[in-house]
Length: 296
Image 1 (cartoon, rainbow, N blue to C red):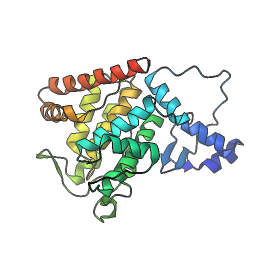
Image 2: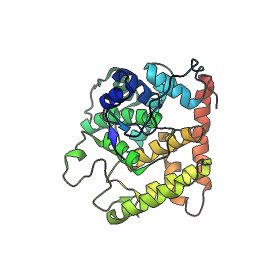
Image 3: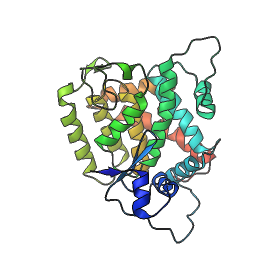
């Protein structure tokens, strides 16, 4: 598919570039996506029509996230999701940043370091993960695609030490074999075919149940398509798909990560552990939603 820029779309539709960007941010141009800070708009996209009535007050999970994201609201649900999801997902993968440091980076775009040294990659990937969550929210209503998944990986790993390695494919599938938890994963030469098969089969249905989302997550992690960052990308996609399917999203926190790992290992022959673990995480999210009075 061919894409045009914001400037080209603005000229084509006789709108200001600011209006076009707003339409993209609000998800009113199907198929538009961000590359860094640049919007890519499908060439055949049609001009969004003006809404005749003011929009209703946001009250669903995705509506609230979109509204608070657009308003850059601090102290609300979006703010909490950015910090909690980023801290926990990165911490599971070995980041040494504390929850407070993660919050500080999100709120001030600076880092406070006291006695202990901090890895630059931890800081970079934390800032990048915030951007990934924004991408997930902006694209929540669209089915997952290889292009979008690669885009997420490109954003997550941009500017890291891995991105400076010639053999490390940032934003593309792995070039060298890897393992996860001591288990073999799909070999590099078979990843593209496996990912295409997984996504095509998954997208055959318009909507999915909770267990189907977990099965997709397991299949993604079993393929392990990227050289690094598979866990975080997989959990971001899982969060996105919960939003798309009107299922309460959840965060795998550090205190349940071992149950989560065991659940993934057992999934081929026993679904119960992973389902129970994720339902427990979902209950925690429901308590948060109740606090913010968000419907689910």
